[in-house]
Length: 173
Image (tube, rainbow, N blue to C red; front, side, top):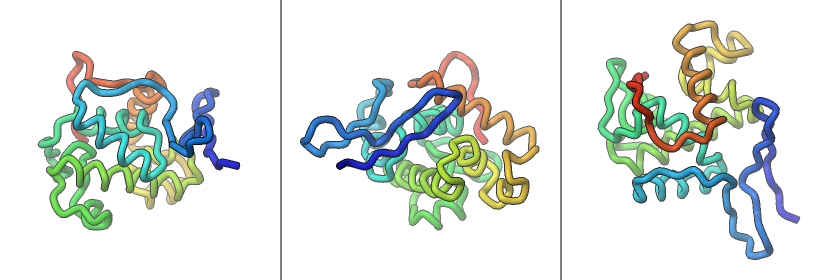
C-alpha cells in the first residue's frame, strides 16, 4: 500500500523513495555518500523531504560548486547548489551561503523542475541550469552549449553515483 516513484534513466530504473519493511521509514536506494557527515546529513534530510534522489542532488552539487559551500560564480550564483538570487528568493532562502538553506532551496527547486517536466531527469536538470522557460521554449534540452554540457556532465555523475570531486577542476556555473 505504499506509493513509490519510478524513473527510467539511460535504460536503468531508479526508484525513490522506496519503503522497506513495514516500519514506514523511507530509505533511498544506493550507498553513495560524502565523506563530510554534516553535508551528507543535509543532503539526505532534504532529499527525503522533497522526494528527490540524493544521488541526483550530489551530482548537481558536484557540478555546481564542487561541494564548496562558499562558491560564487561570475553570474552571481552562490553556495553548494549555486542558487541565483531570484531562485533563492523564490525558494525562501535568505542566506545562500548557509549550507542548510542552500541545500533546502536547491533540492526544493530541483523537485519543482522534476514536477514541471513530468519527472524527466534530463529536462529537469536542463531547467535547473537554463531555467524552465528555456526548456519550455525548445520543448527539449535547450541548444545552448553550456546547458548541453551541464546536462551531460550531471547525468554522467548521476549514473555513476558520484560521491566526491575527482582530480579535474570543477566549473562553477
